[in-house]
Image (cartoon, rainbow, N blue to C red; front, side, top):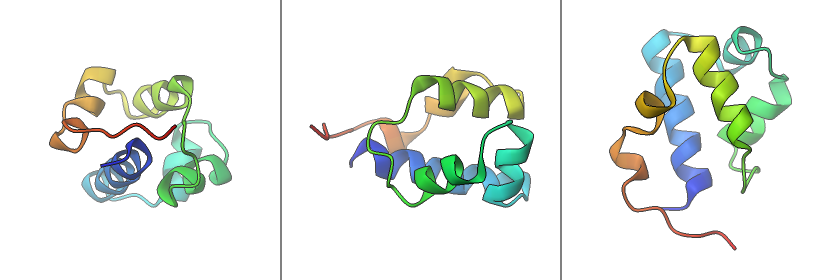
Length: 79
């Protein structure tokens, strides 16, 4: 699976888990709606780690918790 697909699915799963929309996630994490939407739509092929960190901080979870998911077990390069 491509990294962009794994991140998109993870964000969608987080939104379901926390019962929030991607727009609400953006607001909570002090990110623009377009940043989150680009991640969900897989338009961001090389997302910045800082963006993922901001998501984690907004949700008060660790990077380890974010990436501790089978989605990230077999990532294909996107170069």
